[in-house]
Amino acid sequence: MMGFVAGCVPYLLESQYLTTESKFSLFAPFAMAAMACMAICLLQSSIESKLEMFSGSLVSLLVSLIGQLLFFVWFVPVILVWVRESIFVWRKSYPAFRIGFWIGLGAASGVYMGGIFAYNVV
Figure 1 (cartoon, rainbow, N blue to C red):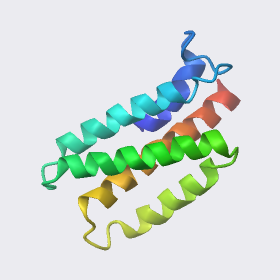
Figure 2 (figure 1 turned 120 degrees about the vertical axis):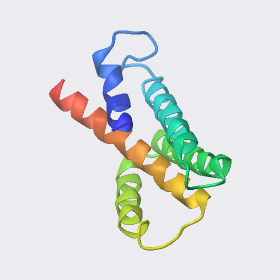
Figure 3 (figure 1 turned 90 degrees about the vertical axis):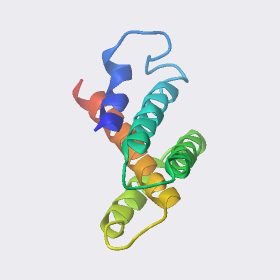
Figure 4 (figure 1 turned 180 degrees about the horizontal axis):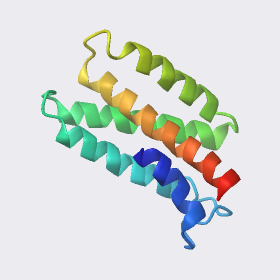
């Protein structure tokens, strides 16, 4: 949810750093998604290695951001990989890094879907 809201923010607020015409329009939503991932990782009580989980979420956010800057349709594989991981993450006991990677992909997918929604609706 936070990723979706973060994707909508540049279309709702008037700021020189958040405008959709500038090259910074992806950086602020991804920074907000990274803060949300950090909060999620720190609030987990069942996983011991919170730093490892947060590093997994940061890696997936960076892969998603850099891929989107290089390739126009990079959001499609990111969303599809997140859906695939969402199907299988509950069936097995994954390490903290992989769970963090799943959290980061979910946040990145939310940023992409929120941006598409805000562009078409708002």
